[in-house]
Amino acid sequence: MTNKLTALLKAEGLEHLIPTLVDQGIVDSMLPDLSESDLKSLGIDKLGERKRMLAVLADSKSAKPATSAPSNSMVRVEGGIFPASSDLAGSPVESFLIGKYAVTVQEWKTVRDWALSNGFEFSAASTEMEEWSHWGGATHPVEGVNWYDAIKWCNAKSLMENMRPVYSVKGQQGAYCKGEFGSKGSENIVESATSNGYRLPTDAEWEWAALGGCKSQGYTFAGSNDLDSVGWYDENSGSDPQPVGQKAPNELGLYDMSGNVWEWCWDLSNKSERSQRGGSWGCDESLCTVTGRYSNAPDEAFSGFGFRIARSL
Image (cartoon, rainbow, N blue to C red; front, side, top):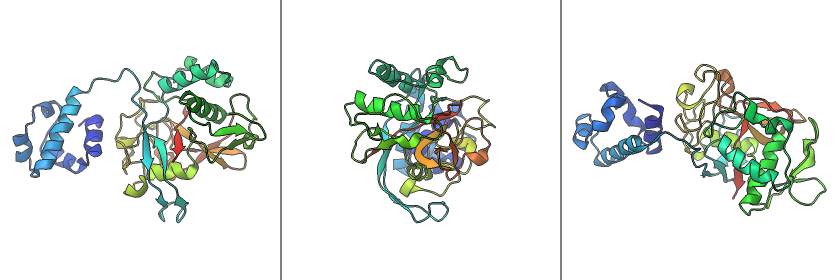
């Protein structure tokens, strides 16, 4: 069965039917012809489940290949307390919003182009990304972004949508929109607790969302104990990033939080570095767990470095 169909079934809460379909020898080519009576003969006894299954099959048949990035809607994540399996065990996290996908190339370009025409400046590495072989198409996650540029991009998106920007330079008025402070000076960037704009998730928010929040099933990776079903890493990526949303989502409907690109977070780590989570298309699966951590200097921009946006409620 395709990853897309698996994802649709999970989104409808019908993932428990997957083994039934597989055990009965149902393959993708047979799916468009399945009727309600066929589903009943397969042992799907509940009328409601058969109706929802038929709707999923209709969605699967009508879907066309993506030519532009999917809508990166924000998903509400209810707050809670971290479980014992986390390094943050017992710590509370407040409710927040987070992007369904990592920021895509199409999103990056749209906001970046607006920003450049409105006084923003980005690093040389980020402005040269279109020349990188790994940059990919519109539906790929943007990569090669350093932490400073991710922060500025969030401010630009906020201004584009008439929201209050989150980030400013310490001691200065107005949104942070140009310049950097090297590998050890990112503490010059401060955030407003009352702004309603876009921002990077905190390290704790990222992990809580990847775990599945209050709906967590305790998986090792974001949505499964089998990384192949939910993420792109060194064993299945073909040494390249892949379009967002192709694997199954986690319990909250969030995609690619394990693998594909490292995602910058707000938090300081190792004194002057900034936290990164999730692993990437070039990583071993051990780096793609929901509790795994990495960090890098905020002015570093490599292939495999991307980000996901968040907002405070």
